[in-house]
Length: 117
Image (tube, rainbow, N blue to C red; front, side, top):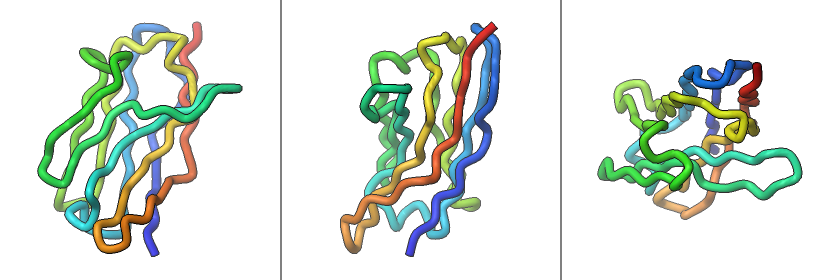
């Protein structure tokens, strides 16, 4: 079984920053990729950023230049640094990971990010 524990969400003013963390119960190399998705109210869940087993990163157009995904291998943790936040970034952010041995998808419980003045 895999657990993904997210933290770091909250309320921030436009232009502010937040860092989300996702601590996995297994080593990051046990996953094909880890990433962050978000789901705004009434909308579908969409990819924000991902990092592959080899360390390659991928970003949604809306995240490019503002968000950075990174990982700490020793801590089994993936981060999402979000800068220049906009009200349109308001959503529940979910950590995602795909396990290599089973190809199963795992999700965290979600963390709310609200950008508002």
